Length: 115
Image 1: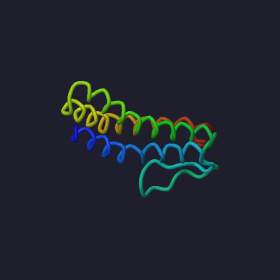
Image 2: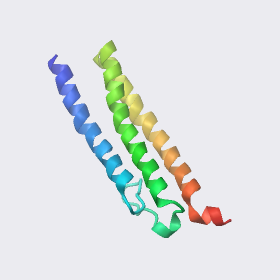
Image 3: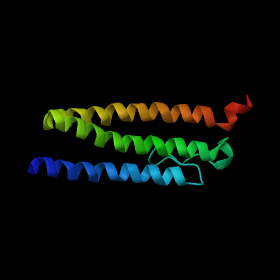
């Protein structure tokens, strides 16, 4: 029981910033970024800033909620299964987010729309 409580606390400490980041990005009026250290696109480079930010925000919220869902599903089958599911979420989710971010950049890039 102690392991479960400790694991849940650690999970919430890790997933909460992801969900908060998603909420902040969802509500942002300026274009948001994805990569650390790289400046986000300027407002004039994006065709629909609101939709771009909403989709980026939802992406981060779902990533954080995915950790919680994997943990809860895994706890039904044991702690080791929860750990494996969370690891799959970390790597698979991150790869999916990179692909989705690149797709959003292609969709909302003003330069591509002008060609």
